[in-house]
Image (tube, rainbow, N blue to C red; front, side, top):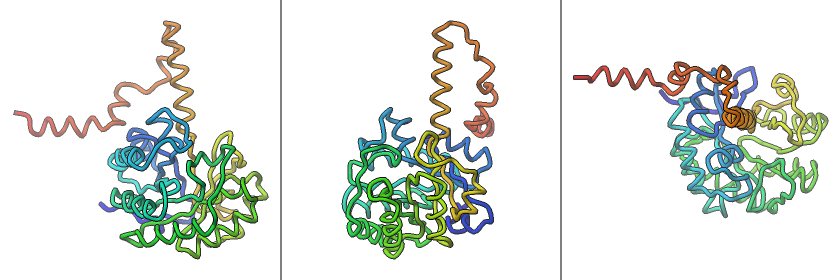
Length: 285
């Protein structure tokens, strides 16, 4: 069964909520929880898969390996983090083609200077706007299907100010982007201004715990003009805390937390044990 197109998801009256998957298991859990779509973000994938910070240490091949495992584990449509395209327009073209052929429904490209970093970290810089325009044009031309949604992300708010970020977003839309992601606004007033500046254009708001942007409810963000709401660290941060607590419990030799995890039966359900057991039974001799 084909995955829904991104624009069909955005046509719904409610905002599109995007948990960020960092591996195949998290992707399966997101789908089981009833979400309509999800995303793969560099911060979570690099942290969980490689134990590294999101500061440009991982290239397309390593990212694509993780993305492939996630897409194979779920039937949901996914938005994939294309980082800065991993180079010039040739690399952007390869990035788009790589993820589209894996089954990505949407891909976003950002305007940071390489090596890039998490959008809520200090020390970012952005490429000249004309260079990013050429990347967006190359990305749009690289698509095999016009149903593949192209989101342009700008990190210029923290570097050049909000006015510059909005001007860049306008240029990126004219270059062929289908939607806009202005990263790291620092107040509700800035969210309101971004939302109103591109009302009617698909926009993404990034809700990151301990980040620069105020955390608002999805309905409020939708009212401001954002059709997509991403949660880039919510699963990862909670998983890390849970593992730290479990490891401390083991060190203490008590297993006091034994009832805080899922049951063996629940875990078998989460990883699809019944499906594979049925295949074994069907072909048993």
